[in-house]
Amino acid sequence: MRTLTKKSKLNFGKYKDCTVEQLIGMRKQKDLISAYFKLSTINFNDEVLNEIGITEEYRIEKPNTDKEKYFEFINRFYEKPMKQHEALTNMRRKPKLLTRAQMQNINQLS
Figure 1 (tube, one colour):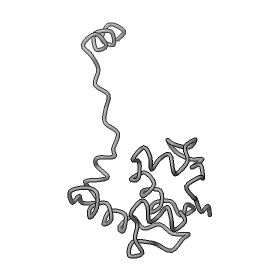
Figure 2 (cartoon, rainbow, N blue to C red):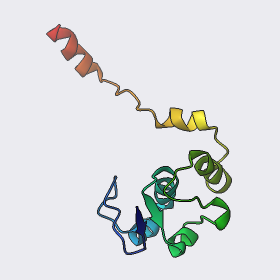
Figure 3 (spheres, helix red, strand yellow):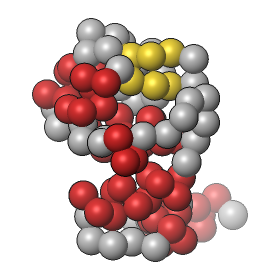
């Protein structure tokens, strides 16, 4: 398990080369919050947890995940209330729309 401080690099995901402090500066707290609740091997020190808004009430025992607590936290502090199935629907990959020229090219090849 890794306990990250402000100076720690993530070494995973989209922002793997960024430090926790840089992500906070870029206002990417939601990404850090998501990692905290959804990844069992990632933890943050108390200073970082306080800075991203995770109070004692929402802290979880590590190594562990708690997606229900994640949705509760996000709904309470960041967004309008969202049901869990709606959030999963929003994360689905959307199909790429083809242009008319691309469709004609595909039809010509067939």
